[in-house]
Length: 97
Image 1: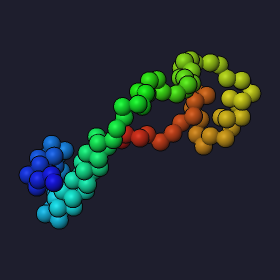
Image 2: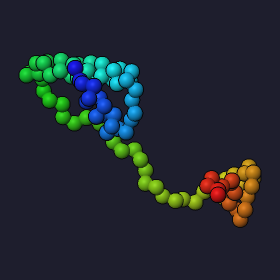
Image 3: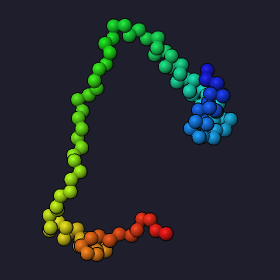
Image 4: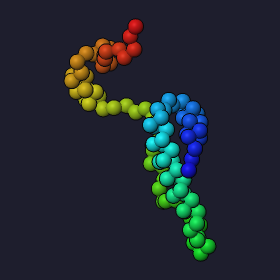
């Protein structure tokens, strides 16, 4: 079982302040996790081929490129904006002093 001192050390590394109750809770939970991992180590994988590669997924992101929008669409968009200045939508500032 993982010790109370080890839990406190992990909490210090994570800059967490734990109560005694939380330390006991995490001590039990982490011990259970480590016990489970220990069980996995006992599994005979002698005839199991190692996994190589992953999936056939590929990057679906596109390059970030500016493009001109349809002028008619811009006009419609500006008509729906609450405030417009110099053909730009004016919004309330996010960072104000």
